[in-house]
Amino acid sequence: MESVSLSPVKILREIGVSGDSYVADFGCGPGVFALPAATLTDGVVYAIDIRQDVLAHCMREASHENIDNIVPRHANLERDRGSELDSESVDFVIMRKVISQNENKGRLFREAHRVLKESGTLLVIGWVDGSPVGLAQEDLVSPESMRSLARGADFRDPRGIILNVHHFGIVFSK
Image 1 (tube, rainbow, N blue to C red):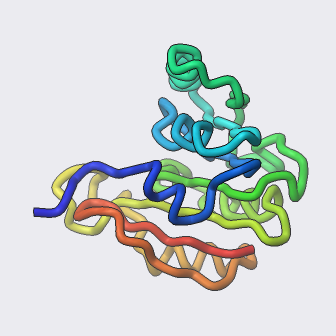
Image 2 (image 1 turned 90 degrees about the vertical axis):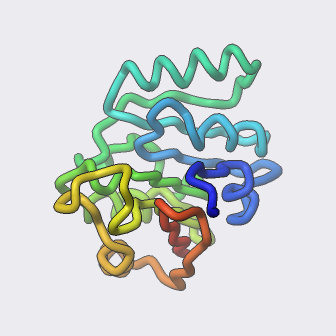
């Protein structure tokens, strides 16, 4: 039987997070990817979320684990320049299950493109259609829709990565 849980460290290593990478975790939640990313890089990890409570949780966990390279950002990613990051300032953007929670999905992809360096990488993770956990059917965003949204923001070279039975992952290049 395939695993239901995600392995953030394995996924982050697979896409190349290491050394002095700068990472932006869009919709970071409690830090499922931000915390592991911070252990893989000496660069900065921007933990970005609209909810103060999950940012606070992420930072408590970072403190508990003696992680000091996470910068929390309370931000609305559906606004123009919503991350408040400088243009071309990060190597990786992670969007884990955040697309389904936002109405202006295209704006998230455009913001990711704006903040990524020229050789940057975007990782999008979503729920698999028919998964017994996660979102209601009408809230799911298919891999095909994700690819279309990414193309609309000038991303290229999509490649799928294997995650588990409930999640799909797509990696895009800027």
